[in-house]
Amino acid sequence: MSVIYLLISISIIVAIGFFIAFITAVKTGQYDDDYTPSVRMLFDDELIQPKVEKSKGESQETL
Image 1: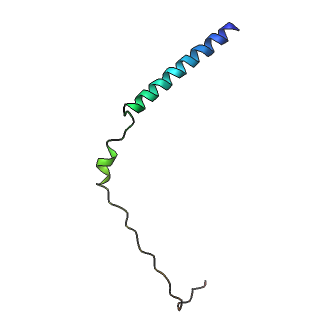
Image 2 (image 1 turned 90 degrees about the vertical axis):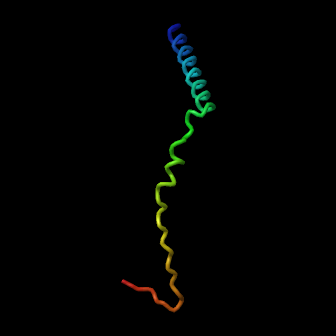
């Protein structure tokens, strides 16, 4: 039974170590995306087609 307590304590220590490493990486800018903003202007925006509004005098087509 004492082996379980040992394994649980070691796993908690390892989890805390990974959490500290993650927080450090986020604070130092490890996950900042520097590439996408420089390439975004090279892609064309999708063309948005204007919607055609029907006037009141037009009847709707039935199938």
